[in-house]
View (cartoon, rainbow, N blue to C red):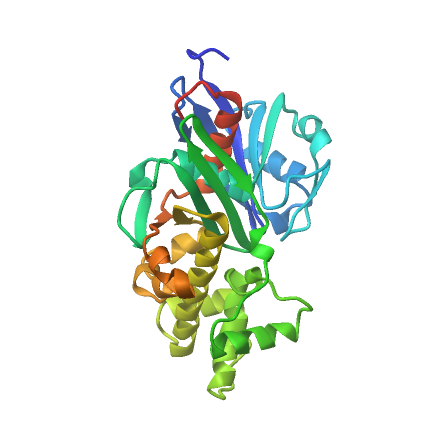
Length: 332
């Protein structure tokens, strides 16, 4: 591809609950633009192919035959099984099924890492630590709660950056206090092993809420996670509000754990739920639990923590990953 050309493509961000599609362009200078996304519920479609056909029906012209796809699953082998929905993707058949000439597949949080690496400074808001720009060298951890818990990191160096996808959301949940112990005990009744994702993801608000109710010996109705989130964020239910605050603390603790594990110079919070909590996180117990790492508390206090505010970091990041792979000469 020459530097005078513009690449038109379809960006997809496939999560546990929704599949988002958007027409996109990569300009000659590497600038990325996205059109208004189309959001479909994965549970309403049998496969990616049928969802793609629905997206194509909604387009005024046929979609371009190039796609960048971010997927909430490990990108290994020829068969990809989604972590939090029933779709199965066969990588060697995608071009034929979707009638594509070229396709780039990337883990969803690797895509978000590409978005973090390429987004301008005004797409971030400060959460904790020093209020300074993201560093131009070193490792940046990217943590995102949504239907699941996404974790990735990237390393910046003089010539560019390298993204590393992980399945860090599935590390063991580590209790810090007696309330965490209650949450863990409740989850152990349902699961042989309790991962961080069981607590620090959207559905995790349910065991948090139930554990707090048990602590106060309250009888509470069986509520779905969406109901607890709504009640807690609207501050119309004191117990649900306490559960949301506890969730923010747990997110801070997990984010701090990954900062230690990655040797991070900065941390960025992403994910649909992270964005929804953007106003609450700075005034919650998030920062205190992020720093609460024993002998390393002072070091943790020196790590900047930000939240990416781009409305569609998965879609933007899928295109950024495509650009990084195919346009290495561009300053993107």
